[in-house]
Length: 66
Image 1 (cartoon, rainbow, N blue to C red):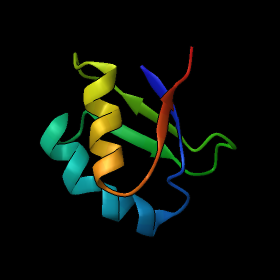
Image 2 (cartoon, one colour):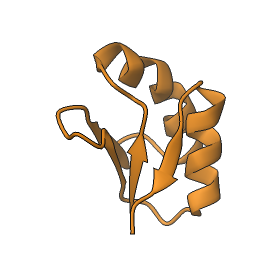
Image 3 (cartoon, rainbow, N blue to C red):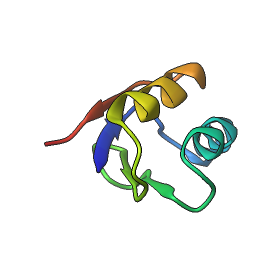
Image 4 (tube, one colour):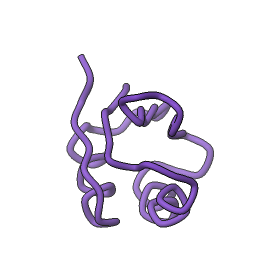
């Protein structure tokens, strides 16, 4: 599943990493900061709300891409 985020740079990715690793699992997600949507791709069987909560706790925003 994919999300549009406000994760803009490698520093942002570093800040959100512990939250996403805890919620989703290490290696089960990635952020493309070169994509205009700053796309977060999740390759784990978790709910959208769990992903959004983890990103929000890190201080960023995420919304599902459909």
